[in-house]
Each structure stands twice: as structure tokens, then as C-alpha cells.
Length: 160
Image (cartoon, rainbow, N blue to C red; front, side, top):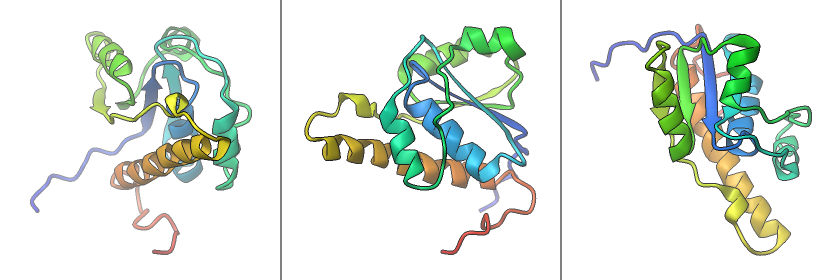
């Protein structure tokens, strides 16, 4: 394939509806694998509440997300600005908000449609499995997307 080499990503922002499940999960995974080479943050369009299932399923793979506090795009902009190379949106509402942001900031926006595991019904284990599926899908996409732009990380030190 004759694809041009992707531009190096120095900073990435993950956005979902309420910064309670999908975007904090993505932030924690990206920090775990690329936190030394890429600045990572997450935010929501609206204010959300911390979701205990997120910490639970991330701790299963050795990632501590217990200190995450949901924040909105407005709060993040107020605290530190929105200077990101890449904004990855995980819900339709977040994608719309990110596209609005690109009127005033220069950032690449990618939409990764990601189901909301909070709507899963059933036993605790069925709900946890829905969260794990989201975690594993995000982990795969993040490692694939950010590895291409990180210097000297052909395999992240992980076995096949």
C-alpha cells in the first residue's frame, strides 16, 4: 500500500456523551500504552457521574482508573484549553460537538462509533461482559491507531 506515513500524534482527546464510561475507558487505555509519548485526555459533552464498572473492568487488565472524575468539554477548555492533534469521538453527540470545535481549533477528528454498555440488561456478569467488550475494542483500536504515529514502537513490547 502506498499510504503516506501518518502525522505523529502528540496529543489526543477522547470524547463521549458524559465522560463516564467510553471516553474515560479510552483515556485510561491510551495512557497505559502511550502515556510517555502522547498527551491523553477525555471529556464529555454533558456532565456525567463516575461509573464503578469502568474501574472494575480496567483493573482486570492492570489499569487503575479509580481517580477519574468526569468533566465536560467546556470544563476542559476552561482548565487547559483544547489544543489536541487528534479528537476521537465515541458517540454521535460527541462527534457533532467535536466538529463544532474544529471551527475554532485545528484538530483532526475521527469518529469511532462505540456502543453504550450502560444500556445492557441482564445479570451483573452480562453487564460486565458488555463493558469488557467495549474495553477490548477500544484497546485494539487505540493500540493500532497510536502505534502508527509513535516513534519506535513497532510492537509496544507486547508478544503476539
